[in-house]
Image 1 (tube, rainbow, N blue to C red):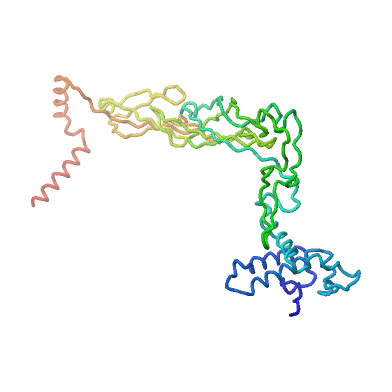
Image 2: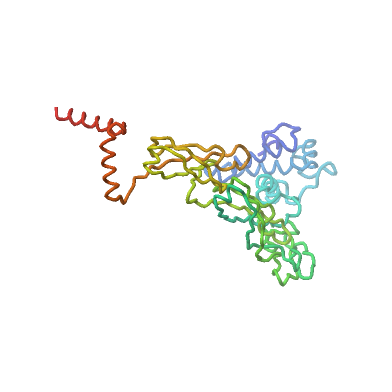
Length: 384
């Protein structure tokens, strides 16, 4: 059976660019992979045929010879007009696996840490850390500078983070040649794994530091000063760049994230930048009206006038007496909510006075009179 034209195999026209060739083969490899075509006996043959075509067209020298002489360029007898035949043949498994390996790099190289020729791996970055910090509502209002203690992996002072005793420098890992990863051939696939010798770092320490056992870092408690801005609320996150765990063998440090929790307050309730304060007042004060003093979150006092005849639940606003906005903007308000308190533990004299007051106040309770009038009408309608 005559071989098909390599450009035809990949669905390309002659003169296709290197990017077009790679893209076409990548799609063919996906579509024709035997694992995805178990019911198609032709899939494996077409899969190999596509790999053979790509192995020739991806190489500029081979492609030039093929463009000039076609398949004859690789069948021997071309003298010095084309590449030397042999070396397993372009249709052999070794060259096909090499072709698929290039596409494997293109598809998965970024995930695995870089493809072929990706350069030396960077030292592993340290882990990010989380610290939960509880502050009072007063501290959230004014902001503060707070010192916290964090235990984490820090750069080893004895080896200056290198992991080597006496300040010696690590050497290139002989297993992966500094790449941090090794490859193994499995049938048609080239599988890439983290180097077991250097754990992906690309370097090894021949004489490990006795203090950190070659890790380049040790556990230590640190004191850090944290600026808590005014207006923080529960869930606010503060990032301290580079204050997380130190990286392995001189790698960059991670970050420290401080999560804020604002403790409940015994007087104020908070809703974003608004504060709510429930103030109990006597029946007499609610009935006659008058002035009261209420606390504010900054430690001060504000005078509030209660209108005569105020009922429980009535709210009054103190503008600008709430919480500051975290990212700028006007300060919130404080809402005063009245809670009319019924007197308890009355003396005999107080009870007599209240009975006398009740007898004289039939026209002073419009809501009660209206309600019970409706109730009587309801009962009368039920009787009829």
